[in-house]
Image (tube, one colour):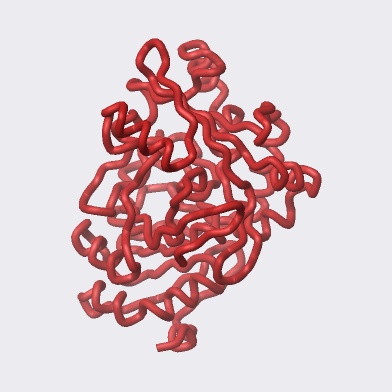
Length: 328
């Protein structure tokens, strides 16, 4: 089955992701298996697709759909905030204060291994807000100031993390263990510098490329979490509290230029402004399925009110090496 067979049911409208109207006949997993190839073709062409009408209502059904649409789901390693695990490879969305914006980013773009496909299932849509907004990373790259992009292309970007028990993901949540030798082995395998602090906390540094060429389309993409994990993206009162509590060098996460120089607030504002200019969104409805090309498309989570239950899966992992990826 080709992607053209789905086109009569595909809505393409400015300001929203592609929306596919689907009828599963009460068997979403079988529908997903039957339409896997055309769905992947649509994601490759557009960067994402929102499937509406499958009626996803529980973690078991959602997980079955996720597995039909991927070659494999990967565990969530090195998260910046904890998730609830429903089943192998099936998680809650990242725990983040509902009144705060989660800015644009690519999942695990600071890792050597990361998912090429993200899958989301909305079991309960919030009363207001809470959209998973999207932005085309190739368009963002073209719109960013050339001199800024050139510097990040030369130097890459640096992520620093300090793992505290009180805030963010703990060592055990990030690495799947709190055994020091196992954590150190993981860091060495994944090109992460590490140092245990006097209070027992772990401090890490990892340098990654900021621009990645899509392995199938060849498009160069702005692929990183430079702005999202930077201190200047935090709410001012949160930033002030964390600096007072842990010191400027002990923040749970922060980003720098690849040579270690600090990133100015103006740079973060510029990046987020370009993201805003290229953002599309569609409010969640109960039962929705969203597929996102994690390299081509950045995503965010907007503030919301009321209950919100969105499941997530990290699909089809790939490895990065010097601006290229393998395993796709």
